[in-house]
Amino acid sequence: MNTSKTADETAVETDIDVSSGVGKGLANQAYEALVDLIFSRELQQGDQIQERMLALRLGISRTPLRAAMHRLEGERVLERRNGRLVVRMVTLQEIMEALHVRRLLESEAAARSAGKVPRETLAAMRLQIETLMSLDDAASPEHQKLDADLHGAVIEWCGNQMLGEMIAEVRRKTRMFSLKRLDNRLGPVCVEHLAIIDALERGDSVAAAAETARHIDNIRQSIIDKLTR
Image (cartoon, rainbow, N blue to C red):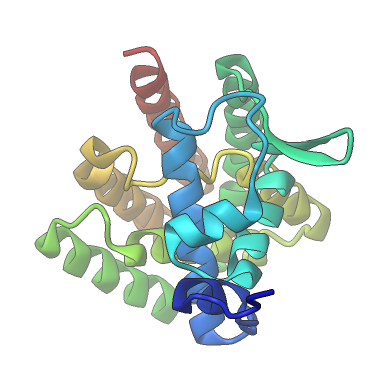
């Protein structure tokens, strides 16, 4: 029996440490590719995730692919049925409910963190936003990193660990709607983030809550527009 493997098959089975920088990058790449397949309906509700076939199709090893699959399972985009991992239908109502909870929790966290986030941290994020606005590239991974950094700073300085954990959990449910898929939001998101930073820097808890709520309301409308076209 011929036991030789093609170069593609060998690459697919290569074990990569996803804790390394390269591994994390490949896992993120696999995640984005899987979400694209689901959004384009190439992978539809109820379709089984064929790990080997997907790894070959994406030209990536199974280790980062499994990390991406685990992440999507945690976001409830994929689910287990009879021991198999399949695509789950994520309803518009479910997404709207998650955003409603985000609005409540993140507004409160922003109010509590106003005036507490170090000024140098906010200044660095402001500079990053202004740089990204000049580049005008919605697909840049720096947008997602900056978004995580800003919301992470609010969580860190809100003074309530449980509130922060709840926000982190519910944010995972809407994480797939990145600027890459809502590219018309590039400019508005940057402006909204700057407004949040301004309020945090001034120590204005009312404005910080209001700007955060406005930001999430705009995300909500963009997702509705995207999914109801």
